[in-house]
Length: 239
Image (cartoon, rainbow, N blue to C red):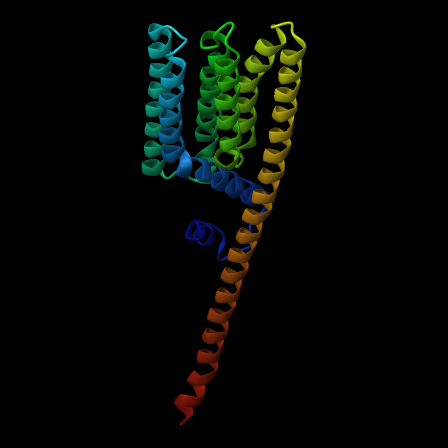
């Protein structure tokens, strides 16, 4: 990543627009770099989730849901591969960023649908397991999606709001409390992800500035060496 900074920012002072474009490029690149691993983990978690819920949920529903998870994972892994091959420039990053947000939103819808279709009635343990699994997926995505904050927000909201609503609709004090705690958890992870996003952005900007300064120092050293050579050339001829 540093080489990308150096090649783009050395040899001149970057404008605010250039710095913003480079920052967005690096944020998107961080998400794509982790996408393959995160999707493999999502599929593994989905397999465990389906295995547990198979005790109380009809197999056709589980197969359909798991198929959706796997299909989306393949699409997003393919997108990560395409991103690596394309090596987009800062001016081209808009559509790749949109793909990240759309993929995260689709994933949030699928995981949130577990609270609708895979939420067994009259089985508190498996209901709690749904909330545990979805909440764990959201918590784990803080590190992988925070570089592009709208992607994390889309995933977290679409995944957890159905859980909140499902608990609330149970019309029981304990369920009301669980719905409220899930909502508090959603707000908390969004705040944490936002701060993580800001801290990461500051770090990336600092690295960009350092790369630019290194380029300016190298350029200045080159000019000094050229001036020294020009001054020494007449002396050599005079001898």
